[in-house]
Amino acid sequence: MDYTVFMPVLVAFVLSVIMGPMIIPVLRRLKMGQTEREDGVKSHLKKAGTPTMGGVIILLSVVITSVFYMKDHPKIIPILFVTLGFGLIGFLDDYLKVVMRRSDGLFPRQKMALQIVVTAVFAFYVIRFTDVPLAMLIPFSGGQYLDIGWLSVPLMFIAVIGTVNGVNFTDGLDGLASSVTVLVATFFTVVAIGTKSGIEPVTCAVVGALLGFLLFNVYPASVFMGDTGSLALGGFVASTAYMLQMPVFIIIVGLIYLVEVLSVMIQVTYFKKTGGKRIFKMAPIHHHFELCGWSETRVVAVFSIITALLCLIALMAM
Figure 1 (cartoon, one colour):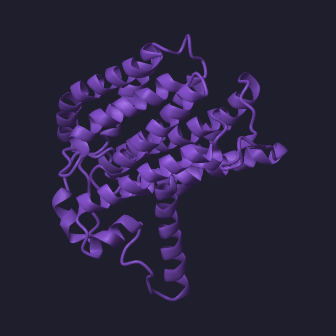
Figure 2 (cartoon, helix red, strand yellow; figure 1 turned 30 degrees about the horizontal axis):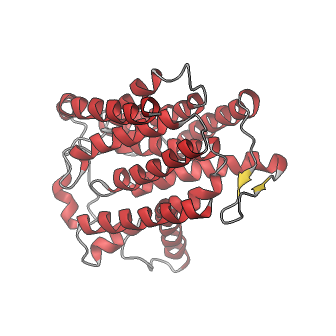
Figure 3 (tube, helix red, strand yellow; figure 1 turned 90 degrees about the vertical axis):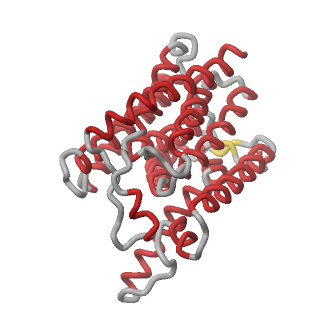
């Protein structure tokens, strides 16, 4: 038990802490600095130039740690694949934006196509090579599972790609996506151990890697995770939920991700329909609270507390 739980947390944490001071100066030299929106929160303008793509630290820590457990825990392979797959899409996007100076990075069509490919490989692998059914545990049902047959495949695409982009939108403040996701990863670790699912080495590695990364990512951040980190973490959350047959629980533990996505969709739709009016002062919603006068650290603290409470509710819902 301690070998599959405490060791991955410890190893990934140590790797993350060691790699931070090695990788951050390299990113700075490569001029991988964050560019801030001119029309955005004014206090963010001073962040311009902070190195981004720090998600590389998280990815390397998780992958290196998990490799040692792959032979005895084959169920971590699909989770690692999705985490790495989405991380590479994010890396490509960041690289084009920051190094090649292509302001949009990957075009939306390219990004979506790559996300669909990674999700398709994951779906194929789960159905063909694992004994994990696509039936979903229903919260508060006393252990009942819902099986919607072939419809569960298109639902998987919506859940995975939706979660990935939710985490991406959440990554807008120092330490926000890291703090929220470390709690979600801890919840999945508790469930993985309790259900003897065999995926705890990778969930523990993510907890350790994020705790290490947070040392460099809390306010004021010396590095941002960029799309490299946020897409990878979204892939991790979605694939882990599926390996535990708990995709419905993403709505509970990942409610912050969902609210962030919805705030953007509502804002854009309302803006177009009303010819320029806004519901929120700025979207995603964490910026709305900043413009209402909340400090960055307060937003991160409140969103993290909400996520911690939601994780407790999700444990009760099992």
